[in-house]
Amino acid sequence: MPVFAPGLVGPALLLSAVLFCIGVAGVLLRRNAIIVFLCIELMLNAVNLTFVAVGQLYGMSGQVIVFFVMSVAAAEAAVGLAIVLSVFRHRATVDLKHANLLQG
Amino acid sequence: MTHAVFVFFALVAVASALFCVTQRNPVAAIMWLIVTMLSLAGIFVLLGAEFAGAMQVLVYAGAILVLFMFFVMLLQLRHHDSDIRGKLGWVLALGVAGALLMQLAALKGYTPGRLAEEISSAPDQFASPAAVFPHAAEVQQTAVALGPVGAVAEPMFTRWLVPFELTSVLLLAAIVGAVVLAKRRL
Image (cartoon, rainbow over all chains, first blue to last red):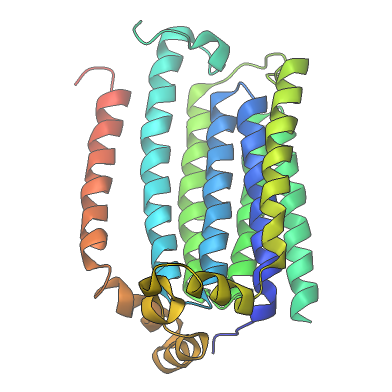
């Protein structure tokens, strides 16, 4: 039996805002490519929380979009980590300071 | 009771997200992000989204972050100095994130009534929640009648069928792209 807590919508939206801002700060603050990817995953999760919170008021389409966001996140992680791997082969580091050429 | 559980999960999620951003070791950062994901799964269940919570545990914590973990172990990273940017980076990150948070903090005041009022007062009358989405009571009835998985499956395979099929094309493209990028010699 699903539970419904409409009173939690405001706090849930605030929590997702806080998590999204932590993700933004992490992307700007770190130079390690792996941790930048983790911060992007954190931002996607914060958006998922928004969809779930609003979706419990306005239909299950919110949860369907959460499903789509998860598949996009999986695709992005696979391709992004492959790019980091090919940079690592050339530069032997995942520090974004050394990833300054498109070719090479 | 529900509020206390929500506050607990929210505090765990925010604290572990902060640890994830500030850890120097990537493995530790991934572990902290797993804690964030699991507490978000708990919040999804609290918000009546059991299916999304289960997917969160299986797909995010179980698949995506394990992929990250394999990747870190594959690379054999050596320990370097801290990769956190200098003073300018801190100013930029805290400034941008703080400004964004000040804007987004207004979301806290949103209640179901205010959300419905703002959407229905939009100039386009078709944007009213009654025209676009079913009412909350109707949503709850559907969820109770069809069960947590059936209530998600029903829109997914009717209204969202084309995006659902396009997701498979996206995943195929991602598989091909990852193999092309990561393989040494094709």
